[in-house]
Length: 328
Image (cartoon, rainbow, N blue to C red; front, side, top):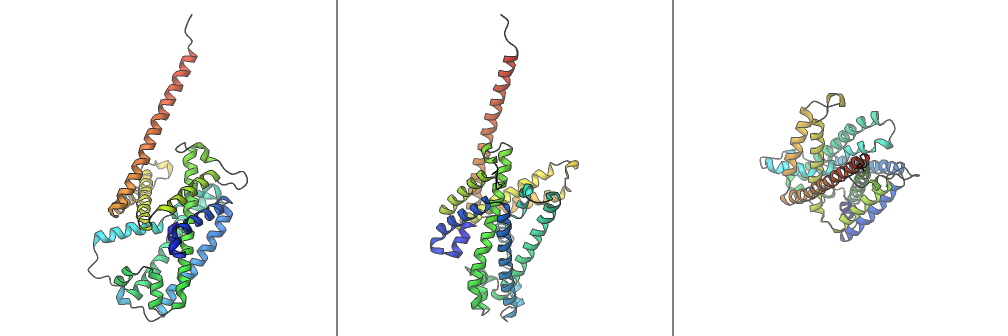
């Protein structure tokens, strides 16, 4: 997402812009959840205004033709699955609201409402924009467009809106990146508390009340990736990672007991199957890279479990020996 901002703002220096943006957003998150929430609200307002202008301009220009919405018979199931897998990247982050439970008011009431509301609004906005752009460009021209919204405005004869769309796209990517860094740092905090990551990452800033060490580490890792990664490979890899993440969440839901709020088994089962299918429908390079990183993570976790188990066994043996001194 950082690279997306970079390519919108300054394509020739996309990596440098991406790193600068990550540093800036990490600083905002470090300053506290209220600063992040204020910036997020501002970004959402700007993006919604720009997208509304795009939809109105597309339908009001006379260039929109409802006949273009017919995708024809050339669509293939595998192609649609692969596109859906890549598109999943655009929805990443909505469930990370759950990671902010310690920093929102009345989380038991707020979070269950916020997640479906955020997903529903996002889906509706995406659908309206997609239909408008396809009606103007058609599926073939849309597939060839490097900047679909800008191209749609050019065809619609609303050239003055093109720079506004470009700014809006950069701001939208900025908002997604802000939410992702915010959510991942809280996930890191939770994992550190459960001893799946080093405990020092669980430290909370005494003034700003944020997991400052986790935020700094996450920011550093994201900045390093933004400085070196290729944007196309990053999107595919990210989509695979997010799909695996949600697949694990669905699988975990299947293990819940009735007293733990378990949903009907069909819901997580459908989610699990859908995530697995979409993950392996992605380009082979994305699947291979994602599987390799996942394998390294699993191996590291396994080694840590073995070391921890042996350390506990050693401590237990020492305790037993100290409690039973030999007779002399």
